[in-house]
Length: 201
Image (cartoon, rainbow, N blue to C red; front, side):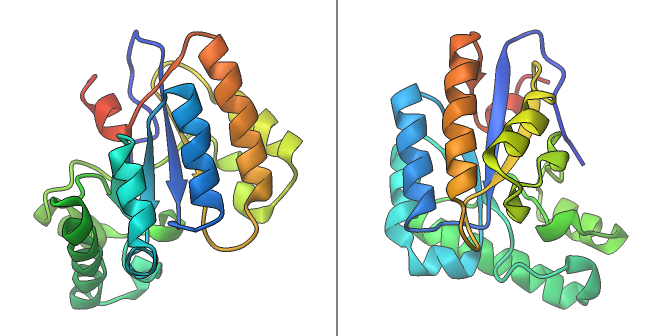
């Protein structure tokens, strides 16, 4: 699992899981548009099918869409056939809107086993994408200050940061991301997609 990419350049990859969401994903897209930054959205197939216009908006703004399965299961608890189906249904949903399959993958709950890795490699994903700021735990709504503090601790060249724009109230996340994006831009960081970061290595 890749949590960061060693690079001499001031690059950080923001990633967002479990969208698209009509309220929070659109707010995050606005933040990144104003900052002239890019991000990677690990989207769920079922939500992609509900909100294709948000996926299209993200793509039109230059963001990357990653595979986060079709229904957000724990992949280690599925059979190989079920795991493959979760990944391929997501690919199909993204391909129908974007015109090509996703190239980055993140398993729900960061849950995977040897079988999952084998399927990911077979599907030609370069790696399982993790993140450095797991302690921010924005999915638990621990407060804007906590999300910010634990994310700031993980900022360095090549960091991959994780936030959530789906499943529940994500207003704390949106506010924390708004502040952090502004801080990083003022510090001279460039906000890039995971694929752009991987190309540094």
